[in-house]
Structures are given as structure tokens and as C-alpha cells.
Amino acid sequence: MKGNEASSTQRTGSVSIRSVAERAGVSIATVSRVLNTPDKVSATTADRVRAAIQDLEYRPNLFAKGLLTKRSRVIGVSLPDIHGEFYSELMFKLDERACELGYHLLVSSNAHRVNSGPENGFALDLVDGLIVMITERSGVELDLDGINRIDHPVVVIGIDEPGLDVETIVVDNVAGARKAVEHLVQATTPDRCYFVGAHRGNIDSESRLGAFCDVLKAHGHEPRADQIARREFSFDWGWDWAQSMLDEGKLEDTAVFAANDEIAIGIANAARDRGVEIPEQLRIVGFDDSQLCSLVRPKLSSVRMPVKEIGFAAIEAIIRRIEEPESAPRHARLAASFIPRQSSASPEEH
Image (cartoon, rainbow, N blue to C red; front, side, top):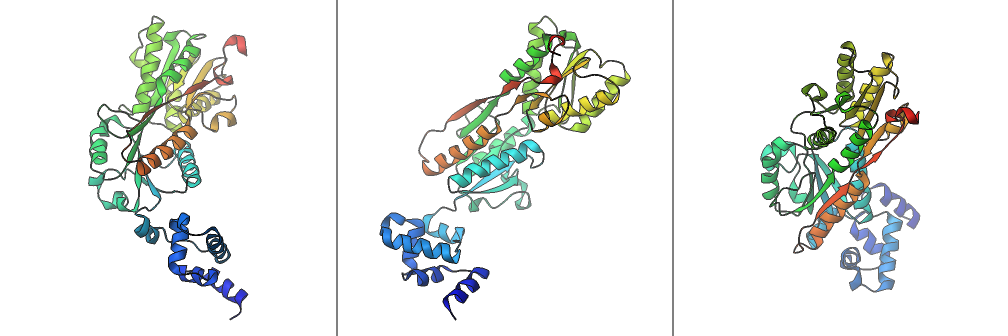
């Protein structure tokens, strides 16, 4: 078989390390050293092997490689959900940074809960380390128990509990939320401000609610029970809440701080459908600063979550824990920033 024909055939099938060795005129062991410990091979030989790898489009088997290096170069990511713009953007940023640093991701939902059964997670022995995101207060003990039983480096996003001896990354929801609510009370009296959030026990929603209440109290108003509504992070919940408020004639001349952008947009759409002008009669601020904020009209004010920074920091932290296991765990706190747009403009601004 001619050289070009052989090359074409190998590219359409499974190219082995033996094929690379034969093309480069070296031993299989030399190819392995170029892949795993290139400093032990002369530059000329290494270049010849890399040229053969590129020509044959050889892809090393990660797990076979791991038998030599004791590393899979795979990072596990355990998220509470994998739907919605926030999680898709977070996964994109995690993957982007991991690829830049020579690692791959394996993503699952609640894989760190080792007692939940193999059907609910993935084989932890396939990964070098695990990134875990925690969002619910009610499951913290179970989450931490699972984390403490994992024999791998771990980085936790979303919570920094006392005594948690792992790397943690949290976002300061409170500072960004306070700025958003302060912005609203500058043109709307505190008794006409409302919070619409997720269910009780959601860590992010509760911290944003806490900031809402603190600002209202600082302005001399104790929040009433009817100023606080909880259910879920969804467009439908925002729509339903707004419809009930409209039916009772309570939504005009008010301001709403929503716990995420989907809730805020649901409220805005329901209000517009009933003839309520935004921001003239209803001022709205969301949270996350998703791409939706710039697509709706008027553009939605929101508190920006530093998704890129979360993703990059998590990947860098877990790789540090993998490569420097004896180093002390670090605890990062990232800032969320308020981004004002037309949806919450005061009368003087529109």
C-alpha cells in the first residue's frame, strides 16, 4: 500500500501509538515519553514524533496515558442543574479555561453526593479533581458529607462554611443587591418596593432578599409580608406574580427587585400586556445580567454575576489543588456589580 493510501486509511480508522512510532522511526516508548515526559527526549526526535502525530491525526487515549502519569487530566464538575443561561454560560467558561490549561471536563448533576447511587453521578475514579456548586441551604449537610468522603481535590462554588477545608469561591450577592435596591428607593418609596425570588432555602435568593430588607429598613420601612414573594427562578413565576398583582390593582407606581432576570422579564411582559408602562409606572431590576437583558425592551437593569471569573477561578483553583496538594486551601470572594438600564430609570432620567 502506498504511503498516501496508508495515511488516508489510518485517519478513517483507529490510529495506534504503534503507527506513530513507525511513521517517526522510533520506539513506542519514545512516543510515550514525548507525550508524557518530553523533557527526556531530544528536541529533534520530539519534533519528528509530533510531526507524525499531526500527520496521522493521532489522539492519545486519556486513560491509557493516565496509567503512566497517574493523571487523567479530566476535571469533574458537579452542578445542581445544567439548564438555563447561567449554567450554560458557566459551563462554557469552565470548559474554555480547562482547555487552555490542558484539561477536559466531565459534567454531571449532584455527582458529589456519593450515597445517591451510581445512576445519579459519574465514576469519580475517572477524574483528577472535582468542582462542586452548592445552591440549597437545606442540603448543605448532605453536600458537605459527600465532599468530605471524596478522595480527590475539591473546589466548592457558592458556599464557604466554617471548617470547610477545601478551596471555596463565593460571590458577594449582598453588595450588588444593595446597590440595586438603593437605586430603586431613590425614586420609589420603600413601601412600594417588592422582592420576587426563588423558594425558601435557596442560598442566592435568600442573600438577595436579605439585602432588599436591609435597605428598606435603613430607609425607615419594615418590609411587609406582601412585599416578599417566593417560588422559583422562572419566567412563568414572574408572569404569574405580576398577573395576580395586576388583578388586585397593586402593580402600578411600584418598583420590583427580582432574584434573577427570567423572573424580571416575566413580570415586565405581563405588565406590558396589561398596558403598564416601564419604567414610567413600573421600575424593574433583575439579577445575573444575562444576555436577555439587552434583548428585551426597554433594556433590563440587572446585577451582573461574574460568571467568567467564577469559571476561570474554579478551574485554576482545582488545578492548583491537583498539582500542589499540600498547599493551603484558598477562599475567594468575587464581586457582583449593579448595571442600571432603562427598565429602572427614574422620572428624571426618562
